[in-house]
Length: 252
Image 1: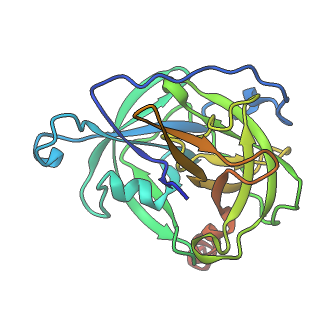
Image 2: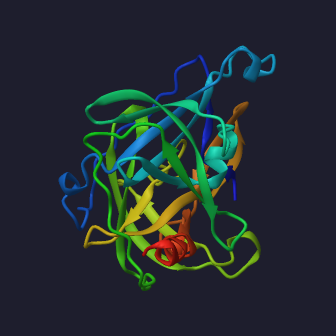
């Protein structure tokens, strides 16, 4: 496992290659418009800790409501969001960006990797919440996600392979996702993105990618796993069950 796929943004530009999609997603991506956003926390001078090239941390989130987002917990930790202090968060979708103050409402999940619910200080008017699926994924079931290479939403399709049963992968949903021949279409900044089934329901949340690094001509090159193997790690959305159970107990 190569490490977290939230990433530190640097002053130098990162270029992403667009590849031709050889397989269609099983749901019209238009149905998911305004459900998923790229989220960015810009650091001030004190937070850069002497690193002039570090400007912030980027991830992905999806709307539980117009005032709440779900993302991977390690994203909010890297962004240094807190449960008390409101901090500005930049939200970007296909129609533009806006800055909204945010804080952590709750962290949930039984495994080492958890999910974070982010509370927004003001509502996002065009936010579209996504239905959560209660049933687990089945092997070979087609799924899709929405990635944000170069800041623009891009659907990426694939399949659920299996549930992890070893070490840090225990209990995680292992996926094979790709765009045409590009097995790194889900990569930097995709942590927190929803994994969607063919009925438009969230089934998991992206956490990590599986890659290897090789050195060639004084360069380090990252490569994905072999075809037919999982290349993306995700947290099953059932990690949020305690949140809904708690809300149900509070209801009159």
